[in-house]
Amino acid sequence: MADIQHDFNSGTSSAVTIGATSTQILAAYEGRKYCVLCNDSAEEIYISLGTAAELNKGIRLNRKGGTMDINGDKPFRGAIYGICTSGGMNLSIFYA
Image 1 (tube, helix red, strand yellow):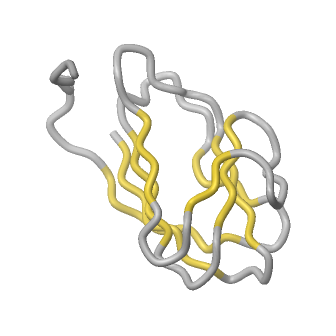
Image 2 (cartoon, rainbow, N blue to C red):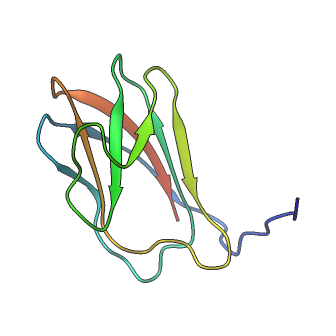
């Protein structure tokens, strides 16, 4: 496995409340170099890259700690969306 080198020295920590309808987590940003999402909630959150999120489709973040990171030479820089069943669930974010 290659050792990934990041070319950033700081980033932003944040949180988003994910709804029962598609919720924008991050807007598209051409300068994005890294992003990690962590499901801090008691139910699954589904992630979609570039289009509205739908339940039971896309990338599933398991409850209580499921994570996803976006990195590498060509990280995804489009908008990121999430959705959950009941709404009001917390997603922790770090991005640079």
